[in-house]
Image (cartoon, rainbow, N blue to C red; front, side, top):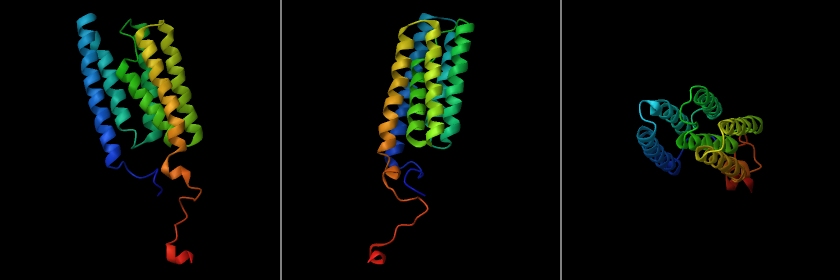
Amino acid sequence: MNTVERPTGPGGMLVDIGLGVVFALGIAFSAYMLIDSWGEAYWIFTTAVAVVMCALALLRERQRLWTAAAGVAVTAVAVVVSLVAELPQEPSPMAALALAVLVGSSIRMLPAWPAVAIAAGGVAVTALTWASGPTGVTAMATMLVVGGLVAGPPLRAFAPGRRSGASAAEPSLPSRARQ
């Protein structure tokens, strides 16, 4: 097992806890603002999508490919449903942040072709978002996904398990054995 395949350490857990707090506060704030502006029950769909997306982003370490693919699919369906049913525009800021986390994490950790597929899916969903017209939500979603696309490659290049030219199957020899 190389360092890329190891479970999340204490630093990674702190990042996930912080991300979870940001997600929870952002979802609560978005729901409050939708209740205040749209009224009735319009906030339920947006909140449900955001909760699912944020849960996928927080579970990304367990099944990297499937959580990212599910995140892209959930976001695409949410965008289409919001357009057809005249609901608040999707992806909401927290769903877009979760999508950016999934895209960036995929670029960092997945093999090249699956990472390219997830990145292309994120770009396609962002382009689909523009079908409802330019708004603040569209611009924010675009900036967040672009942020994931920009952050992923440097993180991939500097991932501890990827710098070494040694194969994960080759055990390293103790210093005495090399002499």
